[in-house]
Amino acid sequence: MWKPSQRIKHKIERGVSPDVEKAKNSRWFSPINIGSIELQQRTWVPAMVPWRASEDGFVTKDVIDWYRRFALGKPGVIVVEATGIRDMPSGPLLRIGDDRFIPGLKKLTAAVNEASEGQTRLLIQLIDFLSIRRRPPAEKFFSRHLTITAAHRETLAAQDWSEERIREHLSNIADDDLDDILSERELESLRMGARERVTDMQFEHIQKLPEVLPDLFADAALRAKQSGFDGVELHYAHAYTMASFLSARNDRNDGYGGTRENRVRLPLEVFQRVRERVGDDYTVGCRYLSEECIDGGSELEDALYFGTEFARVGMDFLSLSRGGKFDDAKQPQVGAAAYPYTGPSGYECMPAVISDELGPFGRNIEPCAQIRTSIRAAGFQTPIVAIGGVHEFHQAEAILEKGQADIVGSARQSLADPDWFNKIKSGLGDEVNLCKFTNYCEGLDQKHKQVTCQLWDRKDITDETPLTIDGKRRLIAPLWNHHAGIES
Ligand SMILES: Cc1cc2nc3c(=O)[nH]c(=O)nc-3n(C[C@H](O)[C@H](O)[C@H](O)COP(=O)(O)O)c2cc1C
Image (tube, rainbow, N blue to C red; front, side, top):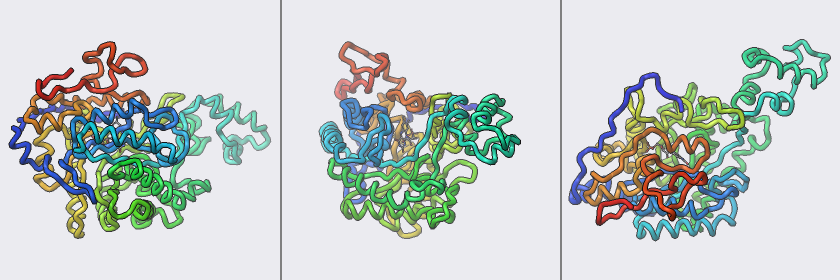
């Protein structure tokens, strides 16, 4: 992952734990409605891909165990990881693009319901993404992937060379010298791996995205409803298709790019189709970016506008993230694909403990507060979910008290200690295992390895402990014995 030049080691404070009475009367542990469902608390575990689905996208026992473990901590909401809406192979990422996925998803919703004793509401994040290829070996790129064009012939003064000779010649040129011969996109395909964009209007399937996506999302949302999820979160954030429509870099010329009004058009159309399909009484919200944190990307002003439009059409909640783009991702190794959390924008999404002066805790809170203020000023009460670096009761409570958000979520801290909400609520906040914010989990995610946490993945391993494929790490956090206050 990219690191800021300032190397300040920030303190991870536990804070003074509230007693049971104080926790009970706190804002964080008070109820709120999102759409037609009531959350018993304003705690929220956002989407995290744990790489536990089967190769063809089905729910596995490991997926169920993973979410059951979070459910034992009884947060207000768990959002199930980014789940693909197309019926298309995409490796061990969870999928919902066909009815055959429903039985597995039903088991998942039942398991969470049982483990949380009905106290946790379960949402699922619906995602669409475009194709991204692994970075090819240079020989393969020149011999197979690159289309030889008139521009190459002209630059090389090789009008009468055979294509084979040009390919051979290019593969012998030093990488730096290729800058003057290949186009920007060709260089990207060589150095990063080819990546489709929503602006690639030369491809029919990209042109047709506005035609196909509303139904794909709507069908997926209906399957979520049929599977027993309490609602859906449309993934309009980070590096994926819908965020790319919202992006200030989207210059499509078909009415879905350019101005803010045009860029928000498809996200609104998708929402409206989803709403028609699942009905008014089903909870539908989205996750989107307060800022893209890339050159030429959308800024807070854009997010203020989008937020108001999302509220106007009746989204039931808005969860805010930041950054996480492909545009500034690190160059992957040959054979690996670029990953959107490896550049400066990725750092904004998941900042680590060694950071710049802004630090890793709450970088997204002020933008989130401004979005909430602007939505309220427009007359809408849509609940806003703030996420980013939250690991402590008073931090969450202060966000709610100041009116910066209505719900406060936490990804990495919840992974570090899935019982942390329950511990705090029981007056046992001193027992919370605090996340170290080193991004160990994210490093595993990047390599598409089963995600675990360094705080617990080597702890108390017995013959019965379910382990990762390499046999070294436990798959879920040890259980917390509430009454004895111990973990086993
Ligand atoms: C292992 C891992 C997987 C993630 N997967 C997703 C995902 O599927 N969808 C998403 O919107 N965000 C994803 N995120 C981002 C988190 O939801 C969250 O926004 C980010 O970690 C910052 O919150 P935190 O500081 O509370 O961890 C992931 C984060 C981690 C650590």
